[in-house]
Length: 227
Image 1 (cartoon, rainbow, N blue to C red):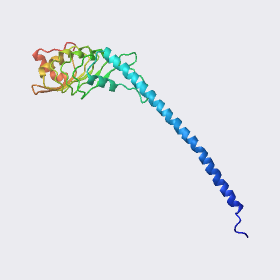
Image 2 (tube, rainbow, N blue to C red):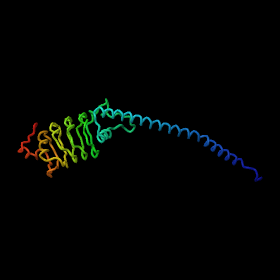
Image 3 (tube, rainbow, N blue to C red):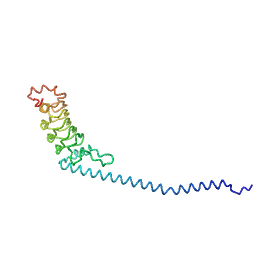
Image 4 (tube, helix red, strand yellow):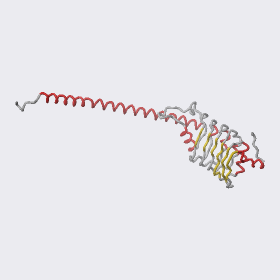
């Protein structure tokens, strides 16, 4: 047999390899096109998300300006408390209609807040945590009659009188109010009928417990207006 002659099977194998190589080469542009289309789609989604976020942030800033909320820490806290969804397109119910009356809870610890001006317009608040800020004046809280839980610890608060008419408060946390005395807390406790309070202040007394544990304050002339 002539060894120089190529076996027909070899030709068949060479043909298969060549066809496979040609098919693979022809698919390269198609794969590249698909990747390009996918990248373009992702870029478009990112652009839409950023645009939606910018629109919502602009609406929120307009609302905060209308409410005259100017403190940077308080503004950031309100913004962070709203859920715009993963896509950034979801409009939180608290922001629908251009208002914040439906916002029921704010947790603003360690925000370096100095002014609460404007928060009196967020009338739906039920829980407000303001621990470890730089708040002196709490008078804007006077209008938040729906509050049930208030945390004011570690602030240089000087007067709790604005809390007297907050009759729905059930829990009041006032640790480390160095400018206040227990007697100041007794006045608020019995005037507003708060059920539970935690306080430590300038006189180094730890006033903690339920309203029933503060009955001694009545002897000082402090009475619950709405028992």
